[in-house]
Image (cartoon, one colour):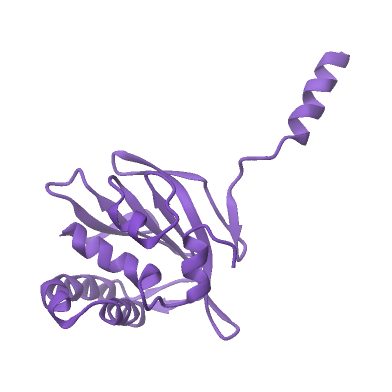
Length: 193
């Protein structure tokens, strides 16, 4: 009996490998993304002034501390967003497109533009996404030569979009030289802000 009690007390005193919590949203420390296993790299909160937009986490094949490491990591990756307020597909699509454009040259945008428009059309077609919705933007290297997949609440939306360069462009919205929010970039890279 004493041995059982000692084991129970030891188990309770060990740190829990529980989910990371941001803005009352819990993110698992691991996620299956397509055929790949990923770990949470970091998580943070997107806010404008005092308005919370979404909580997000970045999942990678292994931890990375810099944007360069994230962009060159091989394997499945996930941008995981949980909306903290209702958002129209159009507003969300415009924000993503704007974030891509801020972090790329005109020549780079020219090569990405058709795929940006495809993603925008899909998001606009979804309409308003309710508070609490879970949005995944996944890089799935096992699909042909690799593709980006959008899912809302676990349901695939639109067609997969080819090209790791496109997924890297999405990552730069949050991790690029002109990120949407500096402290969110730091959080996604696992740095304390």
